[in-house]
Image (cartoon, rainbow, N blue to C red; front, top):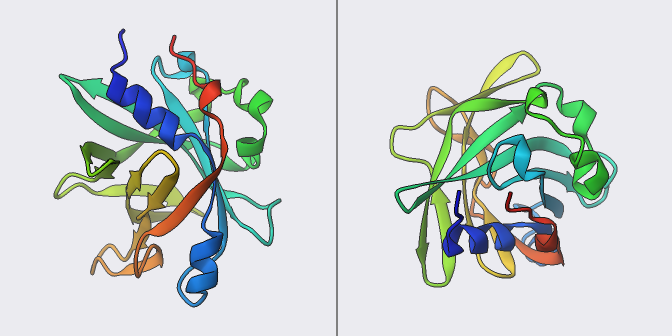
Length: 197
């Protein structure tokens, strides 16, 4: 399957280690200093380009959380990002810093997250991914169903995350990008690790 130049560019821009240190210093009340890893997984796991993502508080680097897989799919020239969760997230804690562990990943370790699909567009030098209208992305966490609104923007050296947890009944944001996007700068590039077959 051929991969478009747009999808290849999007994947390479998204892969890396990112920090929002500047933003957290400017607005410490609203933004925690986070480190965010997005690292390619082997192509054969999903038969397409996909990345492993996790994040951690910069003060406690050894306790990453929110492990997930972002799969890039392309249909009729339209790019979408499909989210997968881990059956055992704890088993993959810290894999964002350990490429060898990610090479052990198989399809049996993950499961699709219903409704967690983003449409990608490009404008003003950035790719923008957002959920379709009326989409609902939910997942289980500590035996409770959680609802999230997903979204991001990415350029060659910046990644902005709009992910936020919401109260299902009211839609009120309860964690994550409540006031504005988390704005990260790329500090390490992992795009050389992307495989295309």
